[in-house]
Length: 202
Image (cartoon, rainbow, N blue to C red; front, side):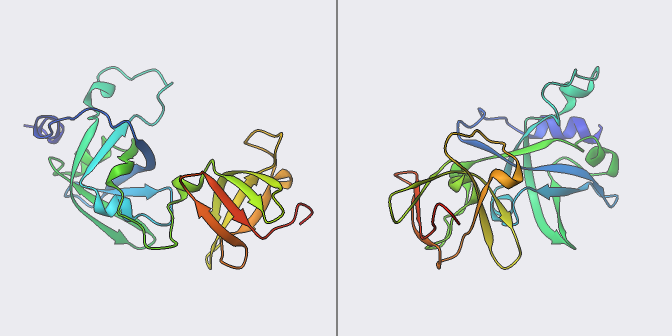
C-alpha cells in the first residue's frame, strides 16, 4: 500500500470549519521518513504547534487540476508532531512515511479552525484578530482600518489603510503605527476597534 493511500484511509474527514483561517503552507519533504517543511504566515506559529488537525486546500484553487493529482490531496491531515528546525518548522503527518508521500503534499495551503487556537495571554493578540479593526485616535478621529501587520523584530507594526481607500494600497499611502503600549491605548475585539495615541498628521 502506498503512503498516499494510507493517508486517505487513515483520516476521517469532518466538515470544513466555518471559522477556517489560512495560516501557512506545506513546502517540501524534509528527510526520507515522511517529514515535511512548513511555512507559517505569522511569526507566532503556536496555533500550528497546538493543533493536531490541519485542513488543506490546493496551492491555487483557480488553477486547473492535474489529472489524478487533485483527488489525491486530502482535505485533512492528522499531525503526529511539529517542531522548530532552523528558521522554519517541520511536521510529521499520520500516514506519510516516506519522502515521496511528503513531496506529494508540497504547495498545499494549511487552514486551521480559529476555535482551535490557544488562548492568548493578557494584552496579546493574534494578527488575524486585528486585521479589519477600525483605528481611532484620542481625538475621536478615524485613522483607517488595519490591513495587516509587519514584524520588525522588536515589535509588530500595524499597517492601516486610511478612510476612503481600499486595500491593498501603495506603501506610501499606508499609516504605520507600532503595536506597543506607548501608542496603543486599547484593543476592543468585541467592538472591533483599536484606540491609539496617534495624530492624523503623523
